[in-house]
Amino acid sequence: MSDLSESLMLLQDVTKTFEDGNRTIYAVDHLDLQIRSGEFIALYGPSGSGKTTLLNLIGGLDRPSSGELSIGEYQLNRMSEAELTDLRLMEIGFIFQSYNLIPVFSALENVAFILQMQGVEKEQALKQSREMLHQVGLQNMENRRPAELSGGQQQRVAVARAIVSKPKIVLADEPTANLDSQNSQELIDLMKHLNQTHKMTFVISSHDPQVIDSARRKIHLKDGKIVSDEIVSD
Ligand SMILES: Nc1ncnc2c1ncn2[C@@H]1O[C@H](COP(=O)(O)OP(=O)(O)OP(=O)(O)O)[C@@H](O)[C@H]1O
Image (cartoon, rainbow, N blue to C red; front, side):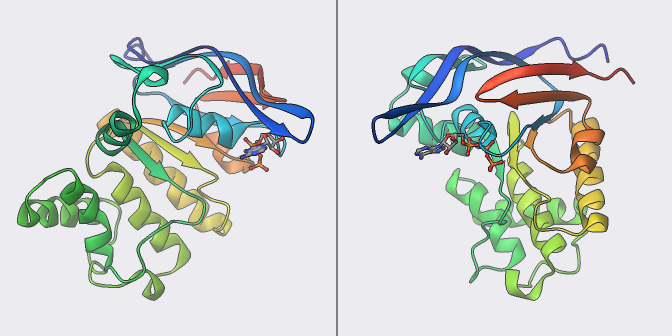
């Protein structure tokens, strides 16, 4: 694709270590990575290879031990906690394996909540959230609470919540882990559709061959390092 030239995210020599007794674990090990706007990336590798740690760094949920990390004009490793919180809220969408919806809120309120946190006025937030639930195929279910929805439907609410504010980048950590293969495929199709129609950038960590096969760029991690980085041509 020719429109994938704009650099969105840059990681330079990024390392994240954890101390385990007297041992230092290199969860992410001197890693360089450039993510371009509009990419659809699968991050795969064995358990413990550093996928979640890398997503947490990209999303500003965690800080690198060393190295430089930037998204657009923001230099993540130099930002205060308050600035990082704002950046996460305004620019990054998160989709988690376990959906992480608020149980006492309806589907609509779960989606609208993010916009209201951003300061969007309530009626406007509800209107935009309704449209987003429509886009993910949940137009008749906006008043249901998470417990009244199937796993696949809950994950669609989570997708709507992640994208309603049109973030620069959407990060998904094992989003199909709790779904059967049909719901997984529907979720992948939905994310691809959003990627193609809204040019939204997705980085998805997964063990799931369905997810890996669907990605245009496949990054293989092992021991915190990139062992292959493959772009599939259309
Ligand atoms: N908070 C932490 N404290 C100590 N060690 C950690 C911490 N988080 C991650 N690690 C270690 O860092 C390494 C990478 O972990 P990470 O969770 O990023 O891997 P992963 O590829 O996402 O694994 P999985 O596929 O099982 O989710 C592992 O050795 C893990 O034990």
